Image (cartoon, helix red, strand yellow):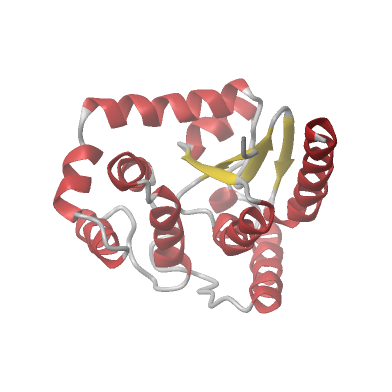
Amino acid sequence: MSLEIVHYFAPMSGYAYLGAAALARMAERHGCVVRHAPVDIQAVFAASGVTPPAVQSAAKKAYRRADMRRWADLRGLPLRETPKHWPAPGALAARYILAAERVAARGGEMSNAVLAACWARDLDIADETVLSGLAREIGVDAQDIAARAHDDVTAQEAAGVTNDAIRLGLFGSPTYVLGEDIFFGQDRLDFLERELIRLKSGTEIARA
């Protein structure tokens, strides 16, 4: 049975964008499953007492921009340092991601498309026309995804994902959960990979 990484993130999270491709490559290297879990980050911040990045001090915002630029350069990713539509409400985007997974098992691709739309393309991820366009770009039925995004099942799933994040004591995006271990921030992917290797080694020994 494959190991599962749960990727808790906000659909408008710059650091989730910077880590998305690296996470996908890591999962492929180790034969892992990634479950993408888009959260209501404002609820997570409120539950954990965290000040949202958009209202942090000017000095901290400036450092964040510089840090993101360094990571984008390191990973070879395009980056809009001050996106036109950030911060944007993420509830509808989260529902589209969950609906894409329900309909076509394409939640990962929809997640990546949403994150890149904000941070590489200056698109408004709170705009349903934009989200439908992203669904078409990844090759899924945009009308079906839109309908599922607005149904009660997806609404309940979205609320459940956020509640799970709060129950686990998460406080930011992205956060990766592997078993009982929590890794906050895309700059902790190396630690996540070390744990994957350790767990895989144990599984291989157990099967031998």
